Each structure stands twice: as C-alpha cells, then as structure tokens.
Amino acid sequence: MPLADHCADRIISLEAMFHFPSRQKFIFEAARLMRPQARFVCSDIQFESPRTPAERQLLEIVKAGYSPWPDPIIHAGDIKKLGQDAGLSLIGSNDISLHVLPTWEHIVSSREKPESSAVAAMASLHRAGLLRYQMYVFQRPAQD
Image 1 (cartoon, helix red, strand yellow):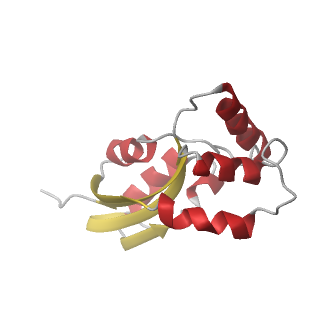
Image 2 (image 1 turned 90 degrees about the vertical axis):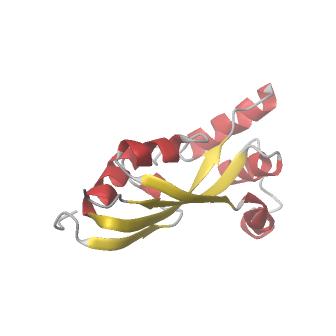
C-alpha cells in the first residue's frame, strides 16, 4: 500500500483476506503500517481437516468453486502463525462459528446441492464443524 510505515493505529479486515493475492503478504503489510501498540482486527474462514472421504470431497468442491481466489483454504492456527511471523502479538481470538451458522439458510438456496455448489459445500462443512469463523486481534509490540 502506498502509505508510510507505522501510520495506522487500527486496521480492520473482516472476511476479506481471502480476496488478496496472499494472506501472508497482507498481514505483513498490515504489520508494516502499524504504529507501536496499534491493533489489527481480522476475521477469516478456516477449515478443520476432513475426517471422511465425503468431507474431503466437499472441501475439494469448495477449493474448485473458489479457485479464482488465491488462497481459498486455510486451516486452524494459520492466521495466528502468520501474525506472529509478521512480528505481531495475538491478544485475543474468538470463534464465532455458532453465531454465523444460522446465516447459511439465507445464503444457500434450497436448490443448491453440496455436491455441485461451493457455497452449499461450505454450509455442509460448517454444519459438520469443519468450517470455522474466527476473529483475531493482534497488537504491534511497543518499541524498546
């Protein structure tokens, strides 16, 4: 971003990181922009490892359906690690999966089947506990 280093007190990214060419580059860029003790709040969809062949197939449908996005699939712990790699401290996280779960009935048409629709496959994975919505709060450490 064409902004000076350490120019931001707060950065917010809600359900957007998967749209960037790289979550890692985005988080590192956010860290560059943050002043000491600034906060970065973000949310992202993450996936747990499939347990069955049917769940693996649903995850493949999600990957294929969202393939124009650079990194459609991340797993538990990936965002935390990326933040730490960027020099940020994780000061809070919250799993909001149960609060988001009811929205699928408004997003997925009853005509959409998980075997042929990426969004319906995501809803099925969410209902199975394999798709999670996680909020994170990172802070840039104070300078020494």
